[in-house]
Image (cartoon, rainbow, N blue to C red):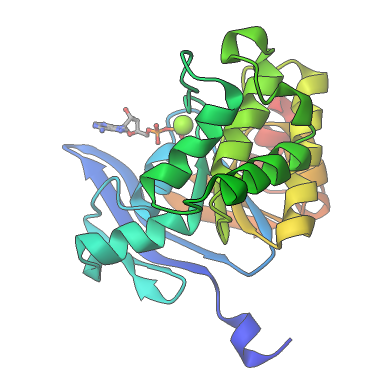
Length: 249
Ligand SMILES: Nc1ncnc2c1ncn2[C@@H]1O[C@H](COP(=O)(O)OP(=O)(O)O)[C@@H](O)[C@H]1O
Ligand SMILES: [Mg+2]
């Protein structure tokens, strides 16, 4: 690896975020390297979604520093922040599609919003590409109500991919799906990592995500990055907290 490749695409140091007396993140550290899938594992309410929101500055932080693609996000003006956000794709559990729009129209929406691919030919080509990438080319003229939950999640992913993000943030990508559909989403995450060389932070409780998609797992506990390792390393860990996660997963 060259020196340049060793520079993390996301570098978080000493991140603190409280809501009143609720100290959610306390000196949380994390690095994400190019092309890597890092999973953040933490129990419900431990601050996983807060972490993701801090990274894209949907929430302000109390202390610490977050660098994304070499920029300190706290320093960016609105324009620079918008430009950075275009490079980051989010898949939130609640990322709903517009029910009144077809799949094609849903996918065109982010392009219009960011003034990208302004000709019909370019737009159609991009819609085709991302629909094919998520294996749903035949749904172009369908409405979200005609799709299963798993298909809607895939279209949500396609809508994010259409902007060709360098970084993906997945917040519980398989939650609420049956195990088979969940596994399909995990496989898709892996396929997208390979195709687009995206770097991803994946927040999840799902054993399949940990086992199949995570190059590294960070255990979020008590607001800190308690411990990091590969799935195999955590599975073999004698740390009582880590053991607890693997029993309940
Ligand atoms: N906007 C907010 N205002 C106040 N408290 C919040 C806000 N967002 C999250 N919290 C609190 O922060 C804690 C962590 O929430 P969250 O990151 O959503 O947990 P999870 O790990 O389940 O994603 C919870 O106690 C939650 O109530
Ligand atoms: Mg959450």
